[in-house]
Length: 365
Image (cartoon, rainbow, N blue to C red; front, top):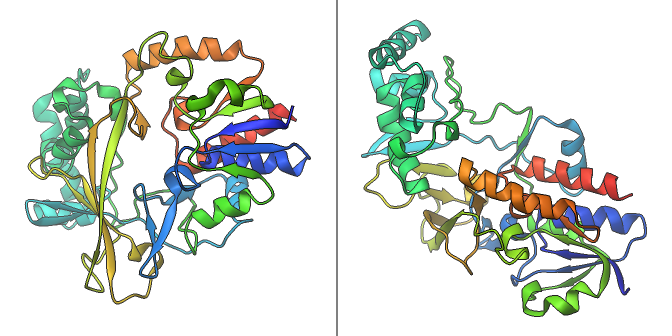
């Protein structure tokens, strides 16, 4: 065989795996159907601003091993994710905290905020939530649900909240402190210089072919290596033999504006249903980029259809059961490995992707 491993997809999972196997002398080839490396964490420099091409990617983790690992390849800044919500022209802080409660009700103490939330929750008397709407109200009450959850969630899933399963919102962080830090993780930041440089360093000395779709010549690629790591959609790999898994799609509209500061924050969420996009990202605020222009991206959730980019799996009961059928096939494979969000059919943050890739490396050594 020409290679020890063929890796389908140059995202974070495939790139970490390739890097580690290359270090122990395994010859790897990565094929990538896009024209760029890095999968969804790809960044592109526009007007001296590192633009997150496929949505905001903020690295955060409590895993010291993963944090140490990723810091081999770049330095991170101290960016703290503090999104702002725009609901019908009024602004609110996320996550739900004392700043938010002051903006909604004018309360100034945790006791005042708790009293209002508990009163709203008690009025509904929901013992066993049957859907997402009931689950949300049972956790945070009606006002927060209506302003900050309902419209945003219905846009994300393209379904009414009372038709969505309750487990989608298992818990909602409610803080009775004046703290706008979205993540509780010990480590958080943005790589100085963007994410693509990390992938470039991971792939040093590794053969990479871009604009190459595995399925256009599957027979050829199956013969080129001892093993294959597939990071695409697992149901597509098996030719949808049990049926199609569901995914959510996204559309990104990115534009350069002739101003040095458009919204004053990296992420603005739009939670009212009448506005079709879920958020506007202003990329320069991730790294405090110095430019007399700015780059913004409107992010639109959409129904995914075949031959479009799948961004994240829909892990409801129906799809989870269907995935298990595919996973049983995968476990019988001796040559094929599956990894990443699409190959493993689960939503993962970047630190979780790295951890899973390193675990696979350990099992292959």
